[in-house]
Image (cartoon, rainbow, N blue to C red; front, side, top):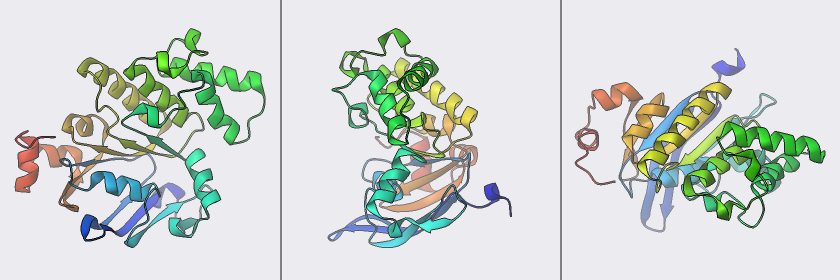
Length: 260
């Protein structure tokens, strides 16, 4: 079997309880290389809990997440050591936060933010690191003349684009995105989304995007899962789910009756 015919990530019956409060329950799916999956639902639906479980920020109450490493071996993420998890997050994975200050080091320059991730995977040549950082600033439409400025001097949209560059510079295979355009002005949202669409396609990235904005799902995702009350209630190809929703809750979401 070809490598790309095997799932990159497998979620099996993922469940999370916070005491007696349910975060999510019995969620299973496969994700393949180059595939973009959107997880949509209103606030409290469990989508952010699911993203944290998948990215090993939370321990599941039941179920498991498996990932196919670069050596071709699929491993249960619960069996990884803390050092192995950290290495995975620095190399094969990226995580784009809704608030870019959570994904950036605000006390160092934009170039250092990108360069640090390269140094974490063994790069040591300063000139090569800086050249690569400049290249990535150009890719995300940030003036490379601002490479030595702190992200504090950047606008919200620029910070988000810098966070994207920081995450992608190590050529990861899987990106987690938590409301990547939330909190941005509409015109800035469109620019960031267009950038993300281009980069995901160019690098054939797998991505899992949590969003309450169905326009984000339609623009970026091949498949969409709809969550309500901690459970997946509908899933399918994005156009199918959004153009012909089967569940009443999904119909309400598509009709924009429910608040974000």
